Image 1: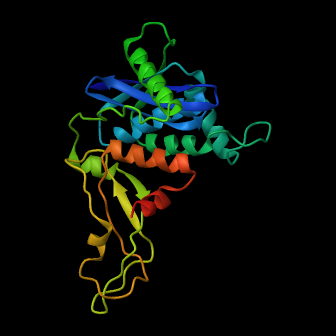
Image 2: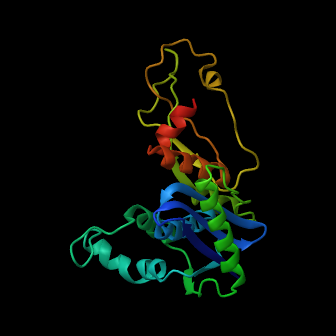
Image 3: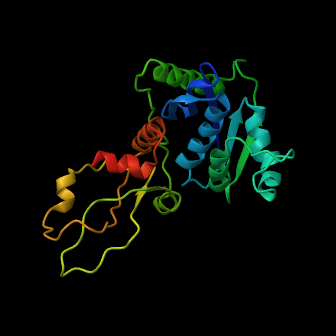
Length: 251
């Protein structure tokens, strides 16, 4: 079985408010964006988000793109860029390296193929992705929350989905009492794309029953839906901070 999806990006002003979207069908799509970015960043983000959302599948994934830049970057140029320390042939740094590195990691070991389609030419999946990416860019232009979509809702193997979940950094200000073992120095959280329901807690709940002073962080694992993860990431990007800092500011 092959799952076919379209990935597309949009930018108003280029750079300006931008959007991304991937689309499989009306029950499986997602969109997002940022207040400021380029069209190429939106195109790459759409591919990365699609790969992360479908991390748990074993089926082949066919990605339709109307961007030659995206397809050539991933299938032709990236191996050479990596060998040269993410430098182009002229010695300059590769643009959008963070997104490309994310795609390189997310695509590893998977059966993924890219297919170029002409944009605005009536390709149903491409048109649907383009519409949603453009709507997301316009939402950011109007300082509104974009329609995020349902995400990837197809059934996947639970073990594979957990193995393919995308890690995000987090920390909670809490410590154990003198009778408990010391907490790890590093704090992490795990975001999964398939979650039955979101987990919410008041900051005070994390401290319930703890009498010792707050000195060392403890590990807190929080399962996020793909929509929640996207909103957190977009919020962090809009503020110019890390996901870890964005989570801390919520506490």
